[in-house]
Structure formats: structure tokens, C-alpha cells
Image 1: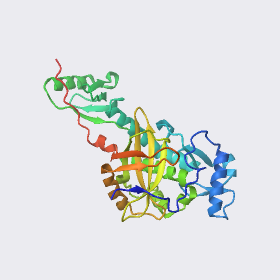
Image 2: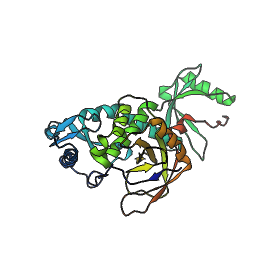
Image 3: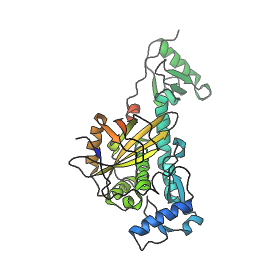
Length: 327
């Protein structure tokens, strides 16, 4: 059965928390909103917040001491505007170990769609050859050799190989690794859910399940999809609670990534009660055949969203068109 949107079943959205993108509130205003949300659930936690990533407690003094800071949920390099407060340690650590992999993956995908070049190193008996490869859907693939970084004998060997109809062996330099790329996507989805549902989500078993992945558990990459809205969505991130027969309620986080191209990703996350990752992976496998009506949550009519497999599969299926023989 296709997944359907349902009433939030205890995951109450806080309109003050949800996707505040313009105007951007100050860190003091954000702290007050989060502190009120936490104290409503934990009266003993007055004038405090929890970092949603490590769940460490901080009082308002942490603002001036710079132990907490505002970060972009979606990296600013990918057009992110939605913000969250996290502790400075989580912000800095994840920024260097995860965020850069997501940004570079999007840049590599741009290159496959003709919006940039991918660095490559060619291997032959003549020596090291550096080049940039540009794919074009409507024109031949171009290989632009970086002369200053290449061995002249290696360049000559490439020319000879093309003339003779030979094979070119090379290594692409994509600048990212798959596992931190997947963790970065899950981190965006997790923080988006926190922006929508506050500590009602962060204190749940489902959120704890996601944090264990961010901290090192096996990455369930099968819960990630590419989304294709049939009309413009009103926000750069949306989170909805969905239901499918025979499984626990689960969240879908939809968010936009803007590099040279604009893409929407969708991530299935466990609901507040938790949900086995393998069950969510199975559900995600049915989404490419589904058409989901997404309610943006305001006066905007429901928008149809189609899905395909997550975009990294495009990189895993690279095929270089045959190059024309040199004259």
C-alpha cells in the first residue's frame, strides 16, 4: 500500500520552531523558544536547552561563552537558510567530517549533468596526466589536460591511444566518500525534523535511533531518495509524518539542495516510537513507484511528489561515451 500522510500522532509541530527562514531570528530568540519547549516537557530544565545532536545541556550563559552556536541545517554552500542551535563542538566536528562530503557530492553530480568538470588522473606507461573531464548530454565528452601538472610523455601516450582506438584508464577525483555523504544527508533530515517538532522529536526513541547512526552505527543508505515535486514547494525543507499499513508511523524529510543544479532529497526517518531501519529501507524501495500528495502545512494546496533512487547511484553507473579518433 502506498504511504499516506496522517495526523501527527503525538509529534506536535511547533509553529515557532518550524522552518523559520525569514526573517532569521537571533540566537537569543532561538534559545528562548527551545528553552520553553524543553521546560514544557521537562520542568526541571528551566532556562536550558539540549544540543539536538549530543543531547548535552546548556544554559543561556553558553551563548556568550560560545559553547553553543547557530548553524545552517542545510549547508550554506547548498543554499541553506533554515537554522538550528547546536553545541559548538558538534557544529565544528560535523562541519569538517560530514558537510564537505555532501557539498562535493552535489558538485560531482552537477558535473555529470554538464554543469562543471570532474578532475581526473590518467594512467599509462608515459607517466602522470592530470585532466578535467566535462560531460555533455548534447555534445561529445571533453577531456582537458592540465599541462603544467602532467608528464609530456603521458600526454603523448593518450594521443596515441586515441588515434589507435585504444582504452583510456583514469581515476576520477570526486572529493567525497560515500559513508560520510550518507551521514551528512541523515544529519540534515534529523535537524530538519528537530526544527519542526522540537524536543518532542529529539527526546523520542526514533530520534535516538538516528543519533546512533550519526555517532557511528551502520548507515541505512536505502532510506534516501531523490524527490521530484511537480510544483514549487513553499519552503526549502518540509517534514511530514506518514503511515503505511503494517508499519509504525515514520517521518519523511524533504529538503532542497542548490548547487549549480537544484535537487530535492527525501529521507525516511523513524517516528517517535522508533522503527527498524530495514523496514524503512523496504518502504523506501516502494517509493519510486509511488505518487505522494504532500501538504505543505499552510494554505498552499497539496503538491504531488514523485521519487527516484538516491542520486549517488548516478555516479556509480558512470559510462564514458566513446571519444572520436584524433585526426
